[in-house]
Image 1 (cartoon, helix red, strand yellow):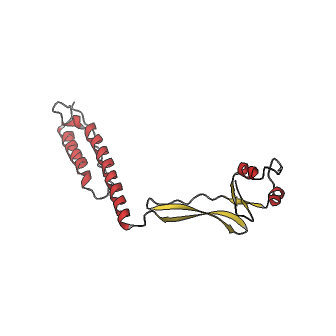
Image 2 (image 1 turned 30 degrees about the vertical axis):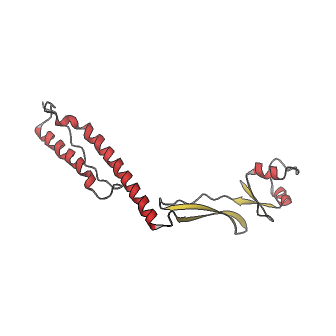
Image 3 (image 1 turned 90 degrees about the vertical axis):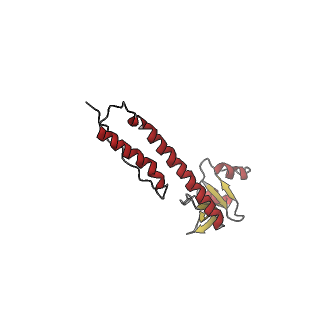
Length: 161
């Protein structure tokens, strides 16, 4: 719980900080409105910061009197002031995501390497399905959005009997 001194605007971040600021005053164990009035302080209504996108930042703007109660205020701003800086950041994030996509693709390819071995006991149709699947995995990087990849579905494994 936060408190605000009504004359100076001083904010006390918690009951301990408030009590230390008034260490010469003996307050009741549980602070009540009379004790707060005596110290000329008000309770500050704490508000969760708003959610924002990766291109935004949140700033704490202090407290404001709203509906006769002191309330925390937050604001959302653009993360970048310079469009060039934003474009550079976006390119770096996109490149990083492409690296994640390639890493996942490589794992999926490695997990199906055995289907290319000549002695793998699978049907020819199954082998052809895996050849197609593995090519689709290699083509994943031809998609335009690394944050919205459409992954191919792994084919069923059909054993020769």
